[in-house]
Image (cartoon, rainbow over all chains, first blue to last red):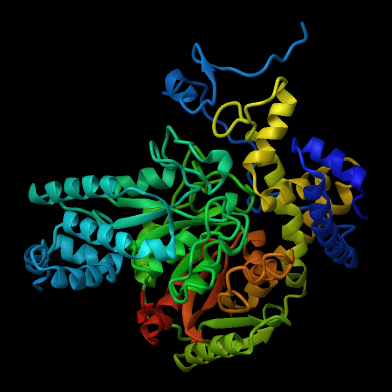
Amino acid sequence: MRLTRDDMESVAHLSRLELSDAEKDKLRDHINRLLDNFEKLQELDTDDVEPTSHVIPVSNVFREDVSRPSLSVEEVVSNGPRVVDNCFAVPRVVET
Amino acid sequence: MVLGWWTIASQYHGWWRLNVTEDICGLTVHELSDLIAKREIKAEEVARCFAERVQSVDDRVKAFVTVTIDLAIEQAKAVDEAIARGEEVGPLAGIPGAIKDNISTRGVRTTCSSKILHNYQPVYDATVIERLKGAGFAIIGKTNLDEFAMGSSTENSGFFTTHNPWNLSTVPGGSSGGSAAAVAADECAFALGSDTGGSIRQPAAFCGVVGIKPTYGRVSRYGLVAFASSLDQIGPLTKDVTDCAIVLNAISGKDPRDSTSLDVECPDFTKALVEDVKGLKIGVPREFFGEGTDSDVEKAVIDAIELLASLGAEWKETSMPIADYGLPVYYIIAPAECSSNLARYDGVRYGLRSGSSTDTVSMFRKTREEGFGAEVKQRIMIGTYALSAGYYDAYYLKAQKVRTLLRRDFERAFEEFDVLISPTSPTVAFGIGEKADDPFAMKLADVCTIPVNLAGIPGISVPCGFKNGLPIGLQIMGRGLDEETLIRVAYTFERNTEWHKRKPEL
């Protein structure tokens, strides 16, 4: 499997990356070389093998539903690139 | 010991002061700790010595993104006051430590060496920082890394490349290259790094210091900026194995804020500092000595194994065929997890925001385009592709299944052997710029360390030789949660060799 230029644009969109054409070509070349290398995995028979997503067997971890101290609103928004009235301000999301 | 007097007197005699600074900064954590506890030197004097050292060498080494000397001196003064009140202090009290810049430090800029976080100031401490502060350590600065810990040389840093103190034209390794270089250059007494595919052990090897990746879950990841969550683990980089045990003691243990931290009892790792390998069974997996292995590196590692054998260990060659597939498995799983973890950098809550957008999606895309470097973009793209509909089974699921096979390889090996030994990296440090354009050449530097992260087991790197003036690292791998055996073997090796005593000339 190899990425085409069209694939690059759709993966870039999914990744929320805006890539220049030059960047797309360079990245495509690198990625395709890596994908070729990944083919090596097909040599192994894994039909009856369980996947490992995590090496330790933890699933849900619960705690009592009681409130605990948390950060102040001022601290939470202190790194915001644009903050208005203790809210993160972003370009308009809904259509008018 | 007259160092305390010397330091005071030498404030008026520059030449003496210079030598004292070098003497103090060259000491290990446990040596410094002894001097402070015996009141032969004040913690504040120690901090000032390291401040001078950083000032005199870091323009060449470039280990630090942010230097926090004032904080270190402030903390050291508090330790001195505690000692003056007659309080007992622990082994890290007043000891200058450097922190990789992907570990959150409250009020101290934490950049991940990325432009996208160039101005980010965490409002909380990582659990490891809380614990080190509780132990009284003095933070000397935040160290450079490959952007978001993605790389093997620090050349992917969004700011600058760190230089290897042993030869300034070579890389320090990565991604914790700043931490390793800072320890090797005596700019700190110890450092913390993080290891996702070798990022503590490989730079430790390149810079001739000790580095351990603990068992997955041994150390809390709370406050470590996530790269690949199923692989990331924090660990110490130190000047010797004793220091490694001391720092590991301070940072290990269950943390309710990291649900993957293990709820198991933590041993006192300094009790494992025992010189004894009699009857130890060492496996030497031939797949870890692959085609790209430098013959001098291989010889140094075999010599090390022979030395352990002469001290009573038994060794045997073995085979772990799945280890050969470690690189492709890693380069699917790590980018997949990274593409998800790095989705949070969107210019809304912290970090960079591109100024010119009128809608949110183009704001996200432009912010990420401007803020991320080429390697990070490449990994996000691969990960997104590997997880996308139609390719998930062929790449991500396949890689997870091979990960299971690899774990079984290790389980089988550890039925027969107590530890496995290999080179930490197939070569010594390479030249800056030498491997910049080949996506695989650089990644081969991690071929021996990656399987350890995929299996979740602990691995330690200790210095075992030199080639052309550059250090060689020995990797010792152990069973899950058996850091004690690694420390015992590493300590025994160290006690019978002199490699760890050599210092780079700067």
